Length: 451
Ligand code: PMP
Image (tube, rainbow, N blue to C red; front, side, top):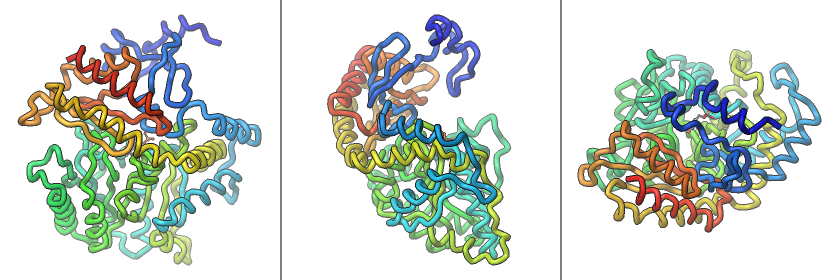
């Protein structure tokens, strides 16, 4: 066992931490999380916190689940790794593909391509949607449309579709042929307070963009069923059905980036299912293996798969695979996680606990001068911090209020996520009522002391 003092001395000295200023790290080194059980984690000194972020939107089944640990250990004892490239495979990757296709029968999904995480799952969807159109004899369909405020991961492809400017800056030039349209954000939009009208306006914006680009040049429209990293933007109920109609009208593939919303987080098994919509392609990661091991998967429906199945000449070989595509240990872990998600009805639990957490936090809109909006669905919740409630102008992120609030919440026993002008909450779906209340009370206290 490594000496705790050595760990503390080395903390923040050698590692670059994404999205944290090095100066801040010097003053306030990262909290060292050492252990976790269920929805509670413990730091190196043994202090406990309710995990209000599920690692990073991922530990849906909770920390320390014996079923998952046993599955990982048992599989690890079988083989280190073997590739799915050259006529070989491993039992867990077969079983997990079968399980995923069974789970997505309502969406008509037909085949799975595994990867290492969400960014990979998105990249896979981008490349294979272009290849789909080549196989269909329309190689000019290469453009991607996505939403403002979207987050589609960290690879250059995903970044080119991201709609959050800070993730794009410094990495340009990005991919050409990527375009963004307005996202349906009821709290911040220049048009209307009426959800149905907003849904129509934003779906029309997508149709107009497709027309403007030329329908026969657009490969796919990508969107998160609920925007996560952009600040938990829950679209109006009618938005996704309208988007499906628009994509159908122009033949454009609809890709649901379910990396966050997949496997129960939004209160439905999949976010797109929650909106009553069948995408053509689904990107999955995070909750798939609940953070125990890295794993991503992209699912393709019958329409997409038929292009390959009809390809007699094998020009459709998929020249896209990662060394760890379908890693046996990751797939075994995911099988154990999905069994828990279904057995414990974690989508239902996320809906109930999310409603309780939202109820607990909503009063902040009245009691705090800086809380403009508390919103969410299932266990995806955000608190929007504003400088002016009337104009809804966001706080100046440079002043660090979100960080101060997160630090204060931590001192009161809950870890929440500061992101610029927002606090984001996404606890494990196994969270109990008492633990939900710990988060709500820690935040109430944080707003009292830190503002
Ligand atoms: N898509 C969405 C919607 C995400 O939220 C994320 C990660 N937060 C990604 C893709 C990228 O996933 P990863 O970080 O596993 O590469």
